Image 1 (cartoon, one colour):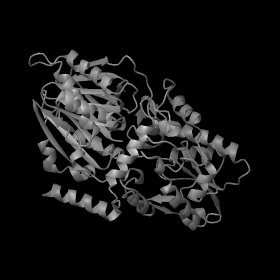
Image 2 (tube, helix red, strand yellow):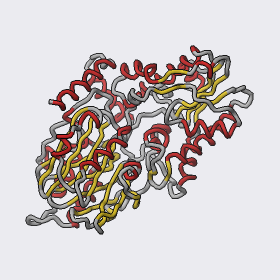
Image 3 (cartoon, helix red, strand yellow):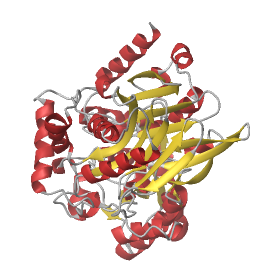
Length: 511
C-alpha cells in the first residue's frame, strides 16, 4: 500500500506536496519522494524513511515549479528498505515522464519479458511500478506524431495500459512540457480522488489517494477518478477526462475502509468514519447472536483504527466503553513494519494497558482485523497480565484467510492466522476465551449503506475470489517461493537495526 499525490497549480507546489505526504504518511513509512516540473525540467528528491526525515529545507528549495507528483512507499514484499525502489520513477523517453503508483501488478513478469523482447526497454529494479512506467512510456511513444503530444495520444496510451496491465493501480504521472496524467485500473481497486481550488481566477487541481490530503491543503473534492478512466490536466490548467476501458466496473478494496484509510477521509464517495461506525453496529449484532449468554463488563478498542467500531458496538449493546490501552504515538504502525521480528518486538513498546480498567473484569477487545495474529496474541496476554478475568476478541473485519496480491503486505498463506483454522482454533492460538469475526456480507453492507452506489468490492483476502481473474494456486505458490528466496535464509532485521537504518538515512540527508 502506498500514498500518491499530484498537483497542477498556479504557484509553487512543493509545500502542498510535502503537506499532503505528511497526512498520507500512514499509507507508507518506507520511503518518500517528490518530483516537480518547471517548464520542461523535472526536479526530484526522494529517500528512505519518513517524510520528515527525507526532506530538508535545501531539498524543498530545489523542488521548483507549479506542478508535481509525490509518493510515500509501503514495501509490499515485507522486506527492508530499498532506496532504489523509492518513487517517483523517471524515464527520459518520450519527452521525459515521471510516475508514482499505488497498488500491485499481477502480470509483472510477463510485462518485463515484453519490455525486453518487443519494447526494447530496460527495467532496472524489482519494482512493478517501474514496469508500469515503461509500459505507459512505450505506449505514449508509439502514438506521438512528430514532436507534439496530443490529447488522443495520452488517452490512447492509458487505454493500451489497461489492455496490457493486470492488477491494482492508481497512478499519477508528469509528462515534461505537457501536463499531469492520472488513471485507475478498470476495477478501481485502489482509490484516487480529484480536488480543486481557485487561485488568481484559475482552477488548480490535486489528485490524492485519500481526500484528507485535499482537506489539509484547502482543496475541495470534485470527484473520484473513475475505474478505467484517464484524466489529463495540462500545465496551463486545461482539464480533460475520458473513459479508457470498455470493461470497467467499480470494485474498491474493502480493506481500505477497515484499516488503511484515515477515518476523516472519503473514498469513492463513502466516509471511512461512517463506514466504521456501521461496522460496529453489524459486529454488535454478531456478538449478540453468537455470545448471548456471555457476561461482558466492558468494551475496549485496540487503538486507533478500531475506535469508531468499538464505540458504536458498545453503544449498540448497552455496555460501558473504556480506553484500556494507551498508545505510544512515536512508534510506527506495526502492521506496515517490514519484518516479523520487528513486528513482534514493537507491540509492547507501542501499547500499554491501563491496569485498573482490566482488573477482575470480563473484557471484549475490538480490533479492525486479525491478520497474522502476532499483535493480537500479545494484546490478549497484556490484558490478562493487567488482571482481566476473561478476554474476548472481536474483529470488525472477517477472517483474513487468503493472500492479498493487490498491494497489501500479507502475501503468504503461512503468515495468515486464519488460514486452515476455525474460530475456536484462532481463539486458542491468541489466548482469547472467544473470537468473533464480522460477516463478509455485513462488512459489504456497512460500506454500501454509506454510499449506495457501491455494490461490488474487492474481497479476495476474505473469500479467495480474485477480481482480476488471473490468480490461481500456481501464482500464489510462485509469490511465496520468491519471498522465501529473497530472505535467503537470513534473519529478519531487529527493531534496533531498522532504527539504525533510518538514522543513517537521516544523517545522509543532513550532509
